[in-house]
Image (cartoon, rainbow over all chains, first blue to last red; front, side):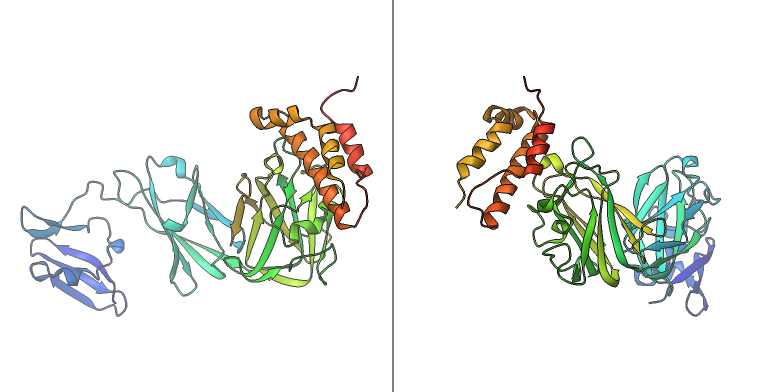
Length: 318
Length: 74
């Protein structure tokens, strides 16, 4: 299907001039002869100021509709990091958001082929002009196209920002930064799972562990486990509800669980489970990756992930 | 088979029936009650799985409970 850009409206002679976006051919359409099917291919998103067309039922003809403001609205200033990973939420900010009164934003996230892969429906406004979307289905170079329209004003010009999304692949993984229980310090963590594919599918990493060193080559370690009953590997065993890592005498600000996968492993999705005991459920945790296992500054923080702070709450990431 | 009476009495030693009821009804000492029951029950299961003949509360748990109980001994 072709898309057409309207660039001329001749109200007096009841005709519009369009260009075929694909072939650049110029066509003049007589409004009096336009069938709905002919208009179906018109790309209204590319209408410029003073080029709004509509049907006037009283006059019984198509005409140029004056919607008030005919100059482009305030251009959004978009700030987005250049590189992101597939697992963390991709955040961006419209830094002049406070200058709008009641804005609506149109977002098109396109891959390197120019295909729209996400839209404003996939973007969440966190407030104060900070937005985010999931990068789980993205990989490689992308663009974010942003158009703003404030209440009563025309749409702004489109702003294009570039960013790239890389796969998450590490040998060593650390889970820490627990947002803990009632007093904020202690957590029970019954289930942490990594997966080779998006949507918690593909190969599960690690396979259900039966000790801190089994099955090979996976090794669980960390800080804060109260005793062997609540050891680190319990977060990776086959029971995601009633057996768990528990830092009963620890401190969630400094305690952590490490997992050595044995080799560099690409992870495209994760799952975190809360347990069945309300007193020790957690609300979020942080995941980092390292190529050396030192976690002394060389690590990459993949993200902090919210987990429903309810009994048996589950968070699926990616 | 381990005698569950010992386990039950040990739980009641640190979290009386009244305290457990109040935890449910009024959210009083819920974290403590959860901790007591979880620690002792899991310790029991671990010892049963290991084939123990008699349940003896593990020393690390005993120490923790003695040091953290939410009341002062008279």
